[in-house]
Length: 105
Image (cartoon, rainbow, N blue to C red):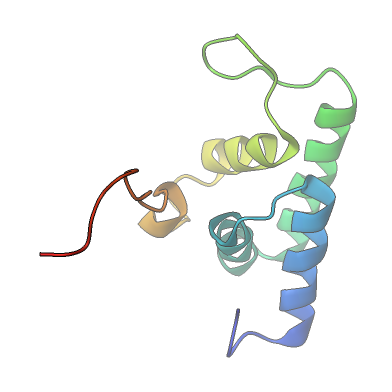
């Protein structure tokens, strides 16, 4: 997954994602970017705050219709606090293939 990333960073990404219930490679990449650009101390503070919010009152989505997932809380807090620090790759979602789309020409 992370060829040139130190093992300790890989382990931090895995631990945070596992605790948040984030399984997608893109979510893991986002956590890696947080660690890389915000630093381990700040990332752990964000993680701890995320868990407090998630296990406490929760946080509603923008439309107010449902509570955010733990990962959603972490990414929201990160975007709000470190907007200028993160690369554009943090904000983009992987493109999903359309159902029924054919690759044959």
